[in-house]
Length: 78
Picture (cartoon, rainbow, N blue to C red):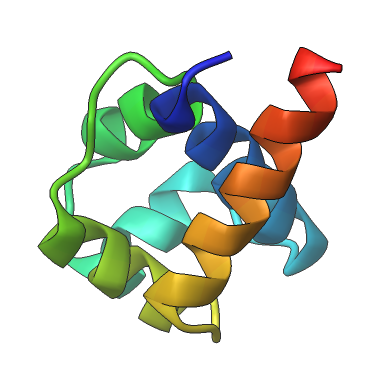
């Protein structure tokens, strides 16, 4: 699993925990719903600015999302 895929897993889990749809997250971030979908599926490498906007909408810091993605990737690689 690469970092983009792991970040997608983390974003999706956090979004669902907050009971947000992809459309809700798209509206909150100003990003397109299709982009949110691509990020969650690990099909695009999100720019750090996009990660920061997504993190803010998910009520956390970009560093927290990235750290969680690293943990997810490490766990998947074991």
